[in-house]
Length: 124
Image (tube, rainbow, N blue to C red):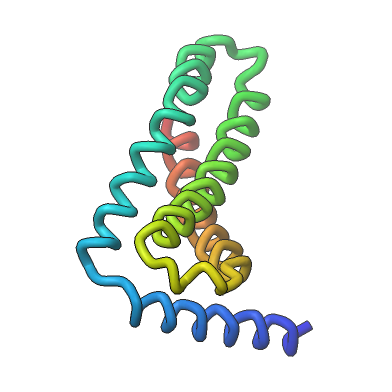
């Protein structure tokens, strides 16, 4: 198991280094802002609907679970769209397999956002 994790981490580092060599800061900022805009369009309505449904005490636990599912989907869709936009900027990145990059970074983003959401849900 540790060997598989180590291999995955090594593949992630190599892929991240290849991407960092081929793109510049302007492309990164543009891809990040575009990805955030796309995800806001996709996830804003469901999150606002869930926020308004939080007044019902009977379904509050179900709504909290749905929030975590939406956070999970947001983190993966963010990285998928980011990779697609970066591939549009650089045609020579098309041949790379971005599976390890998407999995690793999405997991980190999900963990950070879910901890943040859990703290907010406990306080409210």
